[in-house]
Length: 213
Image (cartoon, rainbow, N blue to C red; front, side, top):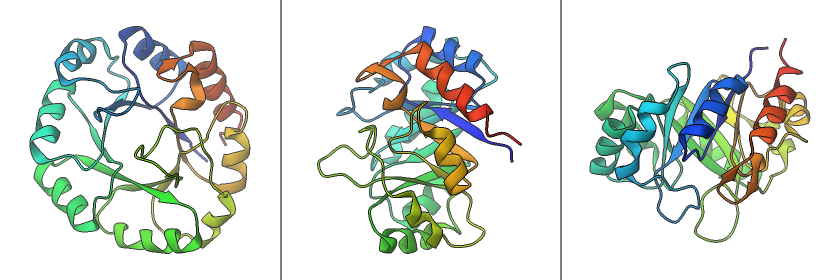
């Protein structure tokens, strides 16, 4: 099984180079001000110029309006839009149609009902990402994990990926137990909130490679 990986919450050119050298396929940038990994639009063009061309660039947004999406796409030369808020299936459909980009929709999970509700996104999102449902305002990057056994109830045929609480220590187990082919990590490869660890990024990707077919 081919497994692709996204390292998210990148804010420096040095870390972007580490991500490329690690073998990850996707690199993520957070356009949500409350996040400790927030990338201001004014800083995006300089960082964009330093991102290796081997990486797919993913912008992460939380209930963003069209203007922010348009500005971030231009500033960061984004390939993928990841919607991590309360966006409805209709909003996901409209964003995809408007910008012509691949769209991933992150969904918080705590129960089987949450899994069942994701079926509405299957026709409109290129991939659904499952994250842990946590209290508070932050939609992701909390390092918390949900019960992966809930994924047994996934609708058949829907492209999906796993995020939420992944780390070098558990990502191989996550892939083995869930069968996911796309993993997304942020806080699990940090030394402190918002501070990426080159060693942990390398360890995460090494663990992913052990699960490649």
